[in-house]
Length: 131
Length: 131
Image 1 (cartoon, one colour):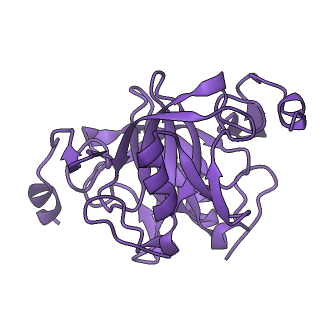
Image 2: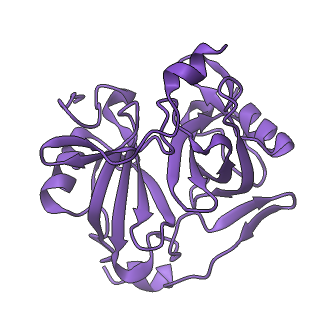
């Protein structure tokens, strides 16, 4: 499964799965973190849409294939160790999170616990029941 | 080692290590990704400085303790699954990357390979030889 690309993410690390951060290309907001294997990375490059690897479902996760909220990839970066990927994306539908928020990071850690700091863009019950 | 906090990152996942994204609080630039365990997260909360867990050195990594480039934590977020942490930080010294760049993501993946898209803030040979 694991694979080293000549110039790019080093999928020989992390058991072939590397964290991939999706950042909104326009606002700079960090939208989500998911994982990629070499196959999902190649498909992302080939299609221009973010494709991840779902660790729970153990298969490729074509982001937005259910909700329609695909991510159009504007640029891809790797970090100094070639073991983390950063995508700058246009988030179709305005929400990356399956809970209906623009960003998965919609809760802030404060001394009292967790505080929701964003508003829902869509109702997840509506979006996911259609299929 | 692993631990579940009542309201916060779920360190019972990921073998007790969760990815933590550091984002520049002012510019929104994604600076780096590292890992935290429960102990490093608690110390981050207590001190207001980013403390990670180094997977290679297998110990707490007080970011900047060698270079002086500490990260002052302005806000902390968790994602919908409570298995990724996002820090908004002020990066002292202007550079998060040990290679001397502001961000560890200083190379873009382009069809021809990797392209350096940033300029060095410091010379790593100078910064790290002092100690």
